[in-house]
Length: 153
Image (cartoon, rainbow, N blue to C red; front, side, top):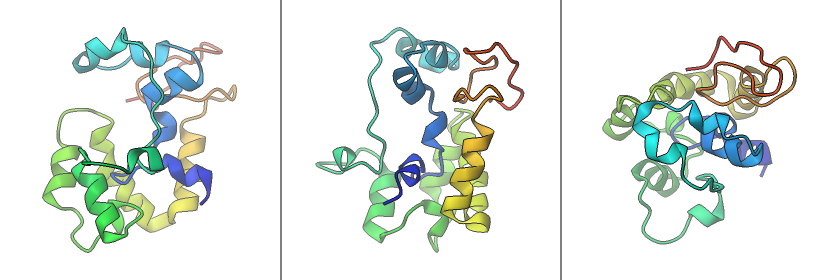
């Protein structure tokens, strides 16, 4: 499988812009410090790497994510490919108040328009600063070059 496709969560999130993932990958706590207040405890917790929901590390046991377990059971690469899209589970996730979750329905529709490889390429451009640094959802200023990032959430 294309490793870039591992950055596409079943729910339509682009994991390449995940604040937690980038904080670990880039060793830069600014990615989590910029999270909304609902994540206050996580801002100062030990940074842990997320294997991503497509990883085999995320595959075993009792799956706590309804969206992932449903997509896997149906053999789908993402919820946008489902005949029941948008269902109650993905709609509830998109409307739970987390701004990055709020992008999932539009992301899944865009995935349907572009296809997975083109969508991943579009997201990589969107979430990379002009200096080449990777950006996360909530960071408004690039930690590497200080450029204001207008597309943050």
